[in-house]
Length: 381
Image (cartoon, rainbow, N blue to C red; front, side, top):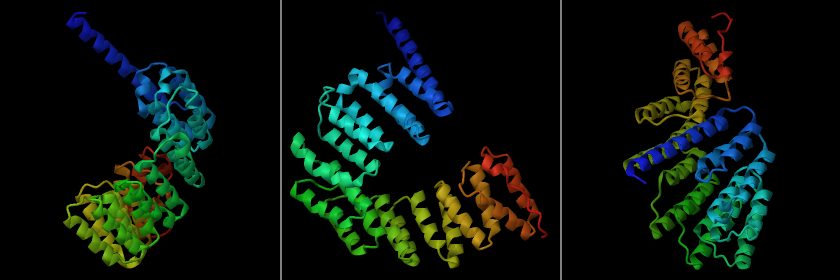
């Protein structure tokens, strides 16, 4: 084959693949009939190259799960068994994981049990996927049994991922002491806890205000040369905020900045939740919001809802209006649409009619119907 022919073949092949991806993207994201979504997905997975596109598996299953179309999830994932890919453990693990994320644990477990019949070898990879499906499906009580029984039956040695998953399950169940004991077991098994291990535990201990265990975990991180990240620091910050030690929390954030850490939206939201618990911190909340904007950290839905509630409670409708404008600009949809109406009402009460009218107009021009019903109040100003 000539080089020109080869180039043309690649171009047409690439063009065809792009066209295929574009078509399925439109179906997955825009088709209202979920049955058509499932049919289109099954049709496209007949193409072996398409079966390598894990993101479309994720998006399609998530779309079906959001509409509680669990029978269609079963239909499209069971359909995958006809392809030779099912003999590849990585491919089968993908399906087990998708079942787990959909809360369909029995289906995940059934597929795991069927793997030998499907000529698919089970290793620690699929074993971890089953444990993960337990956690994602909130079947936390099953995790410890599988963790203790299956390795011996299948000649599998649990790894760090296995332990992290079980630690996560124990933390979710509130069995924090059991989770912490697994650190000793890991050491006996010659396994080194990693950053994920510590972040799971740090989040749990600080939420329970168990600062002594938190300090021990930080010491262990040094021992294992595990460098804490922003998630680690956010967990400690959350603990200080939950204890209502706001000055300590602010000092800790300054320490984070001095270490060169880039604050994320979770850091700011943790701070805002603390400031907004007590009305005396309004100016501090506004100051940190300004810092957030200065550092180009995009606020999220929680940022807006927390600060808008706070602004309304303190009758600072000028700040509330600023938040509403930014919310419209960022096309953020709030579940509590009444907060914007409260800002509009407050502006009118404070005789800031023009600003209130702007917020109503921006709401009516918004892509979200929940904002289209905003209106000017009729009470006397």
